[in-house]
Each structure stands twice: as structure tokens, then as C-alpha cells.
Image (cartoon, rainbow, N blue to C red; front, side, top):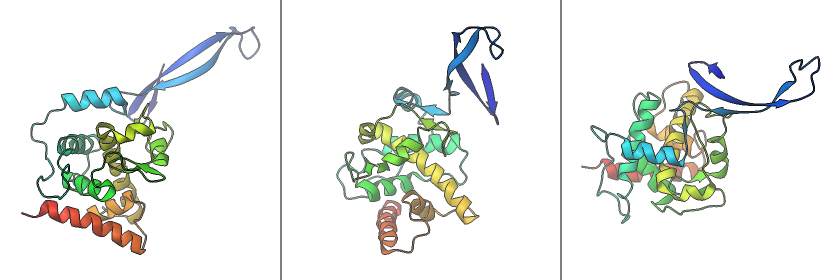
Length: 222
């Protein structure tokens, strides 16, 4: 059975059960469960993340700047950043497109490229929170047009998973910032929205933005 929502179609699998015939069920059949299989291109799990990354064409994609930051492993994730930034720019037709250097500077400011970085609420390179993980897997939630499935909290320590999830979340936050501001946001405003600090005037917000800007400026320095 197919259901259409806007321009997207989902396939719903229904499980019938035999029951005694009644006025409500004259045929003696009732549906006891339904679950949705999402259309390819609107859903990623660990297997599809790996498949897309391995098969994605690197031709013409933009890589973040290298040999510019202090951390020894700062350039270890450049290919993942390049592939997934290009992927989500195209999926969501982002204009102007997200800059791979913005992603890399954000990563530096969030975790200093520590794949196992943890706080009480956030995990991994992109410091994805436990609440954000739930939202990104909810087929009825804020990001239901493109969600992730079967991802566990401990998977967020795996850069192959945390990077595409973080970039997808940043794309959503870009759209949220534009809605809040009533105009296209700057890169810095997108970063603040990612950090939950877009309208904050606190010293914490200023320091968080300054840390990001220092990394971004290093990446852009010739």
C-alpha cells in the first residue's frame, strides 16, 4: 500500500489478523500493525551510510582546507566532510551551498577532532546530543523529511556516522535560522543556531562563536 505526502511516497506494510466477523469487520479481518518503509533518499541507516560514502563520486567535490589547524588529526576527516557536505547540499538544494571549511571549523570548535568527546548530553566529533539523536530518528518529528535509523548513542563516536548526521543537522539548523531571522542566515548565524545560541547575548555565545571563527579564519588563510 502506498501513501503520498506532498511529493514523497512511502510504502506502508500492514499486518492483517483474523477476527470474528462483526459490523465493523464484516470480512473478519483487522489491521493490527503498520510500519512505514521510507522512500530511498529520505532515510539512512548504518549500511546505507557506508554504501553511499563508498560509491559517491568524488569528481568535482570541494574539500576543506588542509594543513591549517594545530591538531594532529585535524585533516583525518576531510574526505567524509567533503562527501557529506556535497551530498546534503544537493539533497536539499542549499543555496548558497554549505562550505566544507565551515563544517571543519565547527567540528574543531565542538570537539577539537576528538571522536570520543563526551559531555553530559553530547557525543562525538559533532557533539550531537541525545535529544538531537531522537529527533533525527523520529519519522513524525522536526526532520521527518530525511531521518536516520538504527543509530545508537555509541555510534556517535564513529566519525563515519557522526559526520553525516552532524551535517544533516546543520542543514536543518540553517533552515531554522532562516525561518527565525526572516532572511538567509550568515555562516556564523548558522553555527550559533547549531549550538543553540542564535539569539543569545551571553558571554558563552560570544566565546563559542569566537572559537569557531578562529578555526574558520585559519582554514581560509592563504
